[in-house]
Length: 340
Picture (cartoon, rainbow, N blue to C red):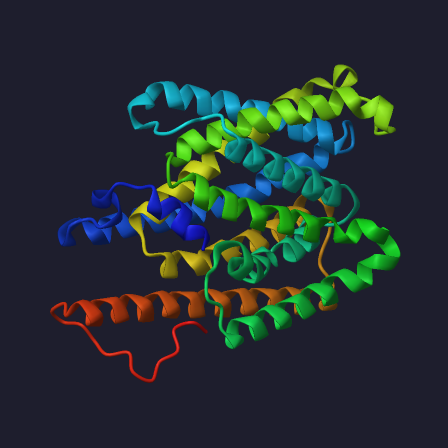
């Protein structure tokens, strides 16, 4: 479902390159996706380091502002590609959900290893599958529901050992995953009438505004007071770098989905777990235990199966449409169940 967001807003020529250019475009797409997955854990590591000097709410605010500044500069250069309203209730909702995702995930980084938090966060595709039917009206068959159930068991395996150590904070990555899944649905609707860059910049601006309001209300609500004024010089550089990485990875992922089939890109996304584990060990000396590894493997396998069934469903529905229209080369789908 995530890949549809990027692909649906791309020009037809970008989504369906000529046969002669398809191979080269696919390779560049895979390379961009690999690079994005390698950079995401770097941004997470910077955020975890920053939690030692400022609050997760502050980190999210300044990181979002840095991202908005970079995307704003890009929008000026590519203003001919901007499409649709940048500020609207739907875009503001996306900004809110992104902010909840980041604050929850960065708060989790503060109390647990990055790899553990990311492993739990990877239930997002499973939650998106559960939400697809009530919120999008999409058909979801029993096989995918079973895969979702198995994946959630994997998440419990990762979470349960940490409940005694981290308390309710162990559920923060799951909250981040839920907010992110909801945002995917919002973004899917929003990109029907606006370009991804328009949406991303608008959501960043709205998110920054909402976070600023939350910061202003922090003392009244009993939240940690802002500490950015007393932060060391390196923290400002880390915030700018985290924002730059967030903007860069979004553009790389959008580029990748515009030039390579989603089925080939999906396995590459799991490199983020490898990178998170490596960064956690190199910077913090953290290594996941056996239960965490087992739960992570179950989550990733379930997510991969859900993605496989979704692609099979799309292929079956497309074949049915071609057959009904009498298109040349159409195939029969008799006996298939594309809604699984």
